[in-house]
Length: 418
Image 1: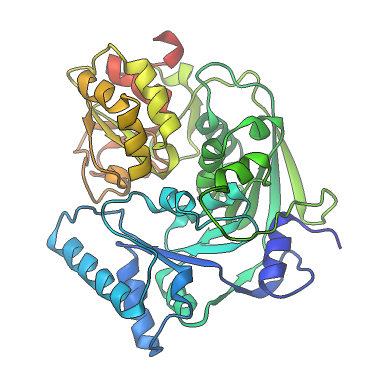
Image 2: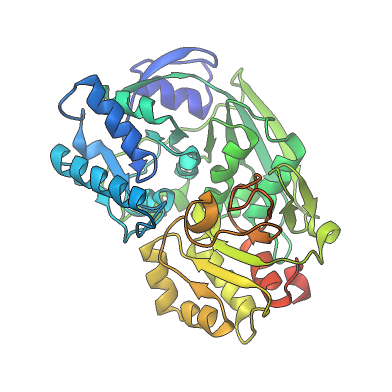
């Protein structure tokens, strides 16, 4: 039977030879991740079940990233609860406030390999499909069941395969590609589908860029994002993980596979405008809109390639007086690389504010919130009303290059003009 990558991975996890879209399977979980914001509810629900120990402490990963360091008494109490749970359960894969955003930390620390089923109490867990895993977000109470049994049921999703072809122009990036796709199919255009990214353009991308694509699969309604593993995938995993893994690829004649062709040869930088991620326009349509804050970071675009791109544009220049620019590396590893390469000096010298690795203002619950009437230009993944602070504020989404260029001018600016 011909199957998609998602069907193959879930069939293996369920101990079956095959699975098909629409089928319900009970899958064994390879990695279960939770963090400081959603973890406490998972722990409370787990304790109500009455199971004394998690099914496998080596497969549980806990990351503090949303409110770190603790910015309120509630956050501090959540941290205390989770630290106590880690001790009680003997969980070794615990990353406290110092390490960074969960979706960057997991692959960096070798927890993600092809062919696995990964669940996390965060919707952007789909990021890890960039390494060829079936990875998806679940609810905190579902995680309690995973903690108890190591299993979870799934409806096997259909697959939309985005065949991306063409050569990206200067200062056009993976973020622009995925925003363009979301703009075309809409926020619900891939509801409960596996979003598979393929084609020559994707093959030319590095793993970090592929993470950008998969990260935003959820923003078009997707159940997961996926990229077929290749030599770049193997090279990324090498030295990070000692897990054995199986590479799976879609059969092109699989019944549930639908293909959409995307030509990026003429693509220009894309902007998601308030208050919906699928309200996407080319930068030429929105250039000149004045902004109050720039946020460079998040699990979408806080990687070293993003910091390098932004620093190249900002070097020798100054952030506009009327703009606040926050630079938040996605992990300690990235922060350290940025220090070694002198990128942090460039940001500080330009007038940007660099903070510790964390989610920052992305969730609207931590540092860098925006007030009523303010406008934020962000490299993150969501721009819903109230997402980064006041419901009377506006959030635009862009690539790191657009963010850096706009920081200099104080208004949305095409990086090709800088």
